[in-house]
Image (tube, rainbow, N blue to C red; front, side, top):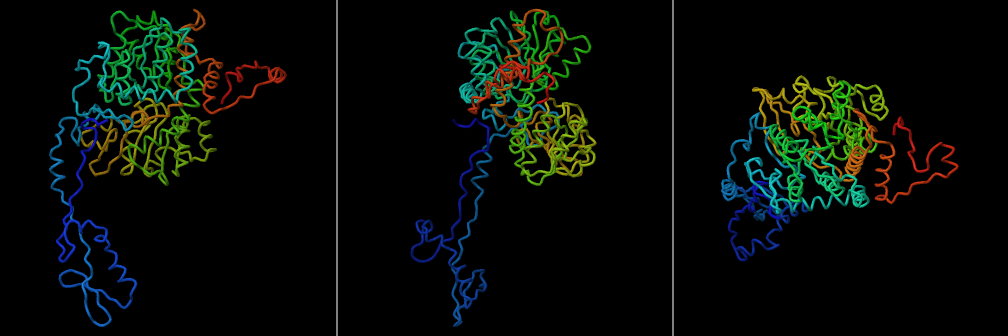
Length: 571
C-alpha cells in the first residue's frame, strides 16, 4: 500500500557527492567506485605502526610522510565528500504548503481541533481538510447512515479487525456459543466508547447475538479511522473520526441517538458522556431504556451521583469495578501501554529518569511497575492511606506533588479527579518536563490554564505539543491532557478481550433480567459472571484449573462450580 499523501515526509534522494579528479591511470567513475578506492586507512596505519615515520602538513593543506633518510612523500589523500542540498531543497519546495491549522506553529485555539493519526493508525488523511460532516459518503450497500473520515479505508480496517479477533478468544467463543440463541434479539444498543479494532470485535459480536447498534467515540483522538470505515462498510452506523472538535464530538453522539424510527433500549457508555447527553436532550428516552452499562471510573462516578440525587431512572451496571475489568484492564493493560505511549511520542529513555505518578489505584500500580522495571526513579502521590501504604510497601516514595515538581522529568496523572496538575505546578516544572494523563477524562491536567496569550503552543508531532513560556522554558504536553495510551499508541488486545466480554455479558444480563430484579440503582456484575469471563481466557495459556472434591467443597461451604469468593473479597 502506498502511504497516504501527507502522511509522512517525502522521500529524499540520496545526496550527490563531489569527487575531485584524481590524476593518473585508473581514474574515472569506475575507479572511484571500486573497493580499492575506498582503502584510505593505509596511511593511518603507516603513521601509527612505524615510529620512524613522521608526518607533517604540506603548505597546501595536504599531509606528508617523512622517511628516516629525509625524503618526503605525499600521503594518500582522503577523498572528502561534500553533500549537495540543491536537489533536496528543490524537492522540499515541491511539497504543498499547508495553511491554517496545519502550520508548524499553531495557535492555541487550533491546537485542540487538529486531526492527527497516532502511530497506531496508518490512515491519516491530514491532506484532506474537509470535515467528514461535509462529505457525502456511501458504503457498497448504498447506505449513508454513518460519518467517518474515509470509507475507502474499510479494507485496511477489516484486516485490523481480523488480527484483533485472534487475540480475543472469549468474545469469539461467546459469539459462537450464543449465536444460535440470539440473547440480544430486539436489543437496540447505542454505544459511546473508544472505536478501535477491539471495539469492532465487540460490536460485531453484539450484532451476531441479535442486537442493533449505533456507535460514537468517547475520545476525540482514539478513533482508528480505518476501523470506523470497516464498521460503516459492514452496515454499522458509526459516527467518529480521529481529531474531532468538541462540537463534532457532541454532534456525533446526537446522530447516534436522534434518528427517526429508531430508539435505543440499552446504553453502553465509557465516561458517561452519552448518558449525560440523553439525560440533557432526550430524557423521555429513558422510558424505554432497560439499562446502562458503564466501564470507566469517571462514568461510574457520574452514575453514583445520579443515584444519590434520586435522578437515576434505570438500572446501571458498574463494569469498571468488576474484578475482570479492574484487575486486568486497569492494571495489566496500563502496565504495558504506558511505556508504549511515552516511547512513541517522545522517544525517551526511561532509565534514571525521575517520574511522579499521581494516584496509586490499579492504573497507577500498572504505570509504576512498568517504569520501575525500566530503571526510572518513581514517586507517588495519593490521598487514600491504604493505597499510599501499598505504594510504600512496593518500594515507592510517597510525596506531595509540590515537593518534587521542580525536579521530575515526567508527570503522569491517573486519579480520575480534576485539577490534579494545576497552572502553578506547570509554571514550576523544569524545562522539557513531559506531562501526560492515563485517566479517562481530560480534567486531571489544567490544560485550559495554558491557553493564554503569553504562552506559545507548537505542534511537534502527532499528539505532542510544546508549550513555551516567555523565558524559553517549555513543557512537552501529550494528547492535550487526554488519555495517553489510546490517543497516542495502542493497548494490548488480549486484555481488552476480558473487558469487552464483561461488557457483553452485562448487556445480556440487564436486557434479559426479569422485571424487578434490578431497581433504579448501580450494580456490580455478579461474581459468577466474573469467574466465567476469566475461565474463557484460560485455554489461551493452556491452563488447567484444579477441581474441588465433594469433601473439599463441603468443608469450604462452596459450590464446586463457584462462585469461589464472597462479594467482599479483595483480589
